[in-house]
Image (spheres, rainbow, N blue to C red):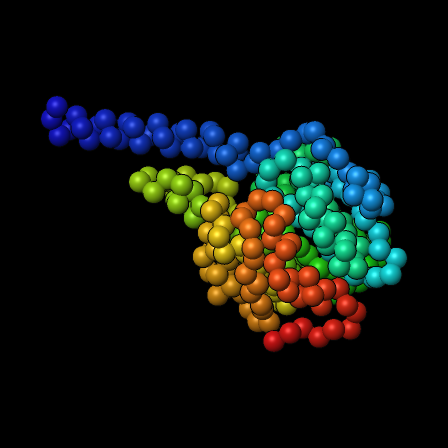
Amino acid sequence: MGMPTLLYAAGALAGVIAIWLILRQQRMVFKPSRELLGDPSALGLPYEDVFFRLPSNARLHGWWLPCEASRKVMLCLPGSIGNISHELKTIAFLRDLAANVLIVDYPGFGRSEGRPSESGCYLAAEAAWEFVTREKGVAPEDVIVFGRSLGATVAAQLAARHPDCGRLVIHSGFTSVPDVAARAYPFFPVRYFCYIRFNTLKQIRACRCPIVIMHPTADSVIPVRHSLRILKEAPEPKRFIPLCGNHYGSEWQNTPGLRPALSELTVSGTRPWA
């Protein structure tokens, strides 16, 4: 086989891989489930089913967990797998910090209408913000935006859009989808074929509120270096908290000192740490 033939074969193979990545990208990033595995009442937590409308008129579903003793709200933005019922232990942990909690499903997840997309995630976060600040009458400075995994990028984008929000908490975030894809496929220039971006670095640079970045140091799915790079790009004031556990699961909640560190965020009148 001559050199021209080899080059042609290599080019054809690259073209096939590129087309495959473009066609499969949506399914590779988003893995939604329509089936709810339970609700907060299974953990003894009172809650309300809440619904929002997107500009497209698609209806989104979320849970509101009230805490009458606090005016603080944890606005929780989940990852890209399953639905909000997969985050029951997360919202129970956040509710136990003495704050109201709102968690929302993105389009195409759980009981939310529509199809998954990057723009749909951002619109869902904005709809949740409007619900908290307008319908619930919560002051922006009392809203703590909490995002986990892919939700970390969504949370950073929301905080960048609303610089008057109280705090931003990034849990196990990644720098961008192209960076994650490049690690998964090191021998192919996949980053040039990623139309789904979720660029956390771009969003974090525009944030103006105090920022907590936390990540399991032994994370085998998204290495901790992603969060350390986000930390480097984040403006002050900021804080990094190394976590126990891996990317999935709830072992991170057992990190020594984590609960009191996050409880500081929900105490009214506390000043941002340096």
